[in-house]
Length: 269
Image 1: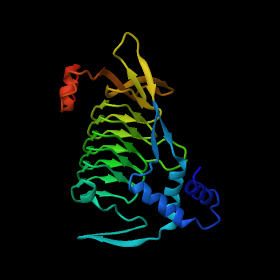
Image 2 (image 1 turned 30 degrees about the vertical axis):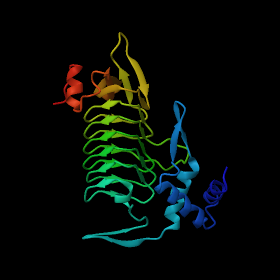
Image 3 (image 1 turned 120 degrees about the vertical axis):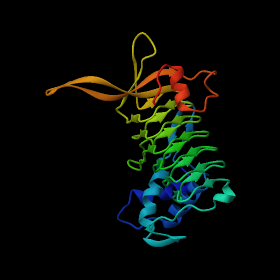
Image 4 (image 1 turned 180 degrees about the vertical axis):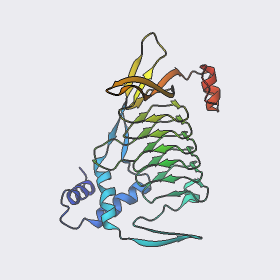
């Protein structure tokens, strides 16, 4: 454990004492610059750096409310907005906003959207109109988050895994991905899919269904589905995700979600 980690953790476990403001501010500065991350790849999995999330939580205690003006817009909040987009090579379309402590890699495009503190967004990723990237979410390179996508945030408990969307994934319009779900590399999530830690993601491409929870396999193509469940009041359909196929070299050049779905006999419109 480094000295910075130790100082942050000591402040977090002693809420009755004032936090080490210098250590907290330095941690958030490193987070904003992309020099540290809340979670990072570790072999085939991911490692959560809980002490960084502790610093984010302490940051709210360190900072007081302040008034901010951005052109005609006025804000009143504890955390400042992110700045320095031109130098970072990031395109931000008004009135998009990212909080200080979020990292945006070169080539990121933010349409009018929102990225919360602790999030990490990889190179060339598109965050489309009214999409939201929650606190500490990890979004890979060359990802497309379509209009209205909701990527959930998680701060507590500090060791809880954030939502992870790996490189090259496509998340369709109005999808919701929350509770630490991991979307695998180059997966395609169809319009309107809701993924929680308990949502079944069922591969129906073989002779028997194969069920996943909390993750979408790499290169899977997922659409919304339902399956019946019996209750005292009767049988009702509960939502699930259906894996109807996997991307192949022949589909990699397709840029429209409907083109991919039609190839597997299912179009969303």
